[in-house]
Length: 106
Image (cartoon, rainbow, N blue to C red; front, side, top):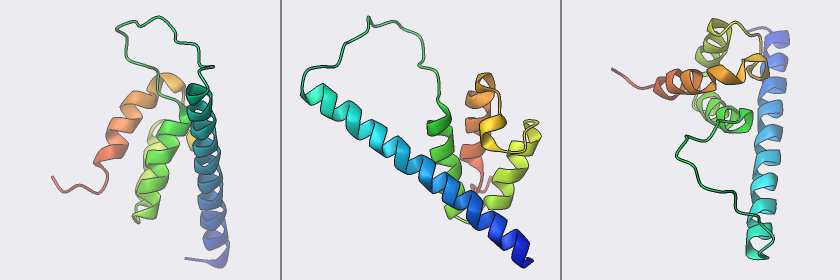
């Protein structure tokens, strides 16, 4: 791996870490609002909640930390994108299913 590739990989991992930190902060804010009783409860429907980029990114970051950075990058490219945030939100569920099996023998 060249120095340029190493720097790019580190930069990508730092972006992923920053996104994970932002997601954690958002979750803490939601928890604080819920404890204060200020959370408005939406009517319950039986539909599966839409996946968010942050949820998908968290799984992708975990796979990268496990040493599967190239596999994650290849999967992103398979979905026609050059970075995770470029993947169409409608494809998140299918992408996540494929992402979750990376690293599992089978």
